[in-house]
Image (cartoon, rainbow, N blue to C red; front, side, top):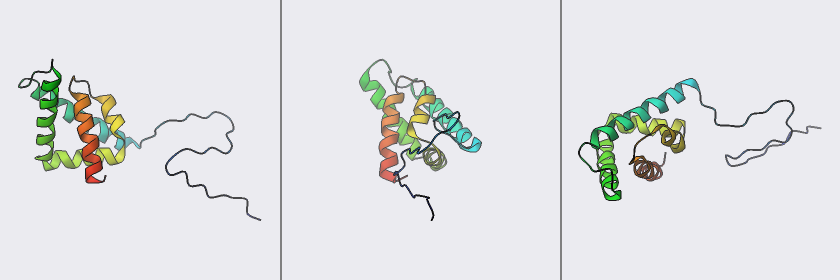
Length: 120
């Protein structure tokens, strides 16, 4: 008799039995992590370039900067493709952790919506 069970968690975690040491986390293939890091660096560079033209000390300024960033991303097929690939390889949270800019949360929100709209 076969005692194996098929358990579909819908992407969640299931651990029937754990022996020894176990570490849970997000694991990425080396190439995937590099892609995410490089894409986040491109987004970071774009944000830093745009903050020279938009005030980042107000919510309205951050939103305007994020809107322009998304406009530039959407009009640059190469960058858009790299972002889609990075989102498919990892997660929006992985990119968010790598961005360090006052308007980053607005861009992350827009990218998350963009990801859902594009169905990636």
